[in-house]
Length: 212
Image 1 (tube, rainbow, N blue to C red):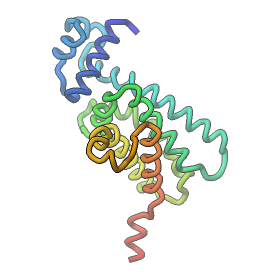
Image 2: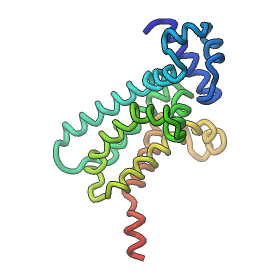
Image 3: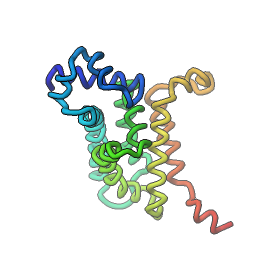
Image 4: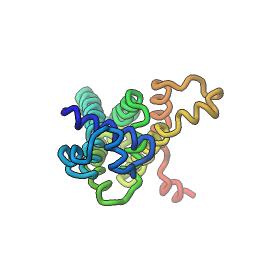
């Protein structure tokens, strides 16, 4: 990648992590030590800059997810899949990436999953939706009998747990770390996957209501 282009992306990512996604283009050019013409040359617009920023971070994550899922399905071509293994393929790559680039992913994930504007919908469609669609059959094999709406809800809540962990694990460590013990990457993965697995295996609220 061109050095100037990379410097602009690094500056944008730093400022998004510090101040959120509404950071100004002027702030980005100042941080990168470039003029507006450089941004226009490499990205044409702030929207295109942000799209490139998101893709730069999510492409390797999604590649890792698909590699893990492909290997799991190749080893188990038929029958039920391990739910924990599917969750590991779905969730661990983003926790691994966040460990290497702390502070980068929570603002990006927060935007993709919370803001309803047209650009966010496009970013979601490009970077997140294909992965969720690819994992749905694997989750269905791991939790057979779970209806499609319930499956989708549980995928959403699992992603929400990861967003929460990325955004608050340092605060959690400061406030109640003495009750948790060391909070390292292995611990985060184990706890998030166990929590998500419990949610996937929980009875359907509709079925529970019908029994009552």
